[in-house]
Amino acid sequence: MIDITLESTEEERIHKITKALATPTRYRILTILSKDEMDISQLAQKLNLTEANISAQVKHLEKAELLSCRYKPGEHGVRKLCKTKVSTITISLADNDSSINTVLLD
Image: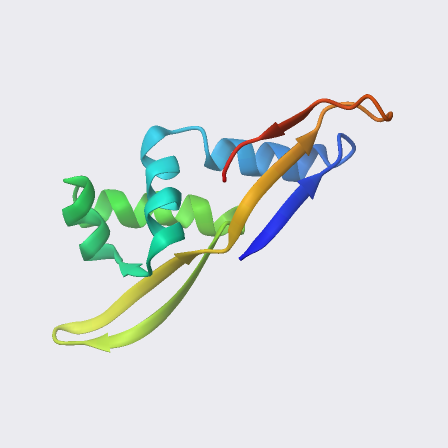
């Protein structure tokens, strides 16, 4: 896993990442996948949500480059396995040495 440090000048990327983390479900997906790789159906079962809902949430996290996913043959087709790519996200809100840092994900 990698650490992401974003400066205040990276507004577009900050917006993309914070938008991806804006829902409790997406945040929970990231924290679950930081411990173990899982497929969509396992995540849906663990979170008591539909596979369609989890799949949509995973797409948001993939667009923000917070998850890595791969496909693997399964019993009934292909399984999408996902894992968190990052361990820490730090956003610097100021351009000087007295910057305020916010850690969004440990």
